[in-house]
Image (cartoon, rainbow, N blue to C red; front, top):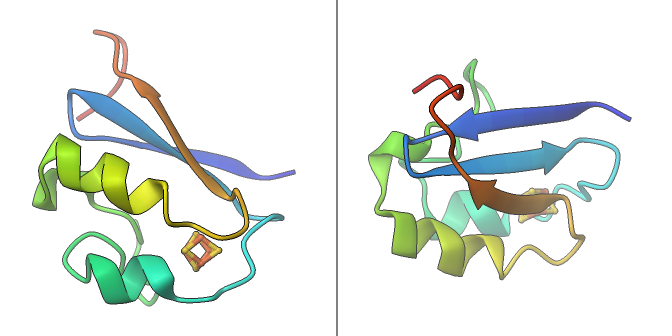
Length: 75
Ligand code: SF4
């Protein structure tokens, strides 16, 4: 399974591509963060950590999750 990580320096968004059902809820909720046509397609620095956590909880497939960032995570 492809697992990608995207950090805003506080949390790391984890996206499991095989689980994503492309519902587009993430894109509709935070269009400045999720933009499927670009690379990287997730730019978590464009929203607050609280907004990101609330959005991740809405992902219907479990493709999105998060963990606390560590100093090793790239911005
Ligand atoms: S909300 Fe979840 S399942 Fe829907 S497109 Fe985004 S990552 Fe994929």
